[in-house]
Image 1 (cartoon, rainbow, N blue to C red):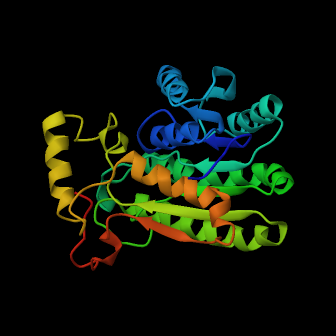
Image 2: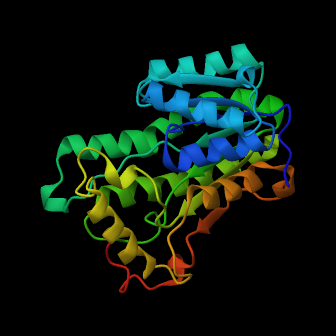
Length: 268
């Protein structure tokens, strides 16, 4: 099992779903945590859960704000360095999704997905590079099966994740000479809140459960993913056990990437 004692891990989108699962797993591995998200109350809840996993209160920094804001991104990094004096792992997890046909997608929805899923990660990574070079750390981007796989009614989401995959590989080449690794984890459907935001048709519990049942059949392994499934993959890639792995796009999707696009034409 990887050991992250004395290591500092910054996780965006840590207030729920996959980000919460990643935070809890790193807490159990002894990491010091810098957690960000939009909802202060939910971040505090996750912080408490991390303490139940073994992290001490003083090992956790919680910062709420909008990651698409350059001012917040800089504040997030500077406060992390001020408290912990280093940064070893950056987990770019924050994301958003709108279900909409291309003909019905608004410019506001487009901007929200591209700025949250791609732009914010690009510039947070850029600003984190000096600290990661110093610690010989690494970056793990949370992408999606939607990056390499075309799906109907989520075109912009697919575009944003495809861009994140390419950014992962390009940045891995730039930083390899400095001993800094960059990888991505591409989940299939995972039980989380991303499909249940205010604008989603899946806020109703019954409809969401129906959605998950349909998704089971689209994953050859016969189930949808859990945040813990993604968290364990992230911890592996971030650990010394993966010291010779960089530029990797790791599917954690129950085999869904092996299913032809003709079959998996929609996330619904």
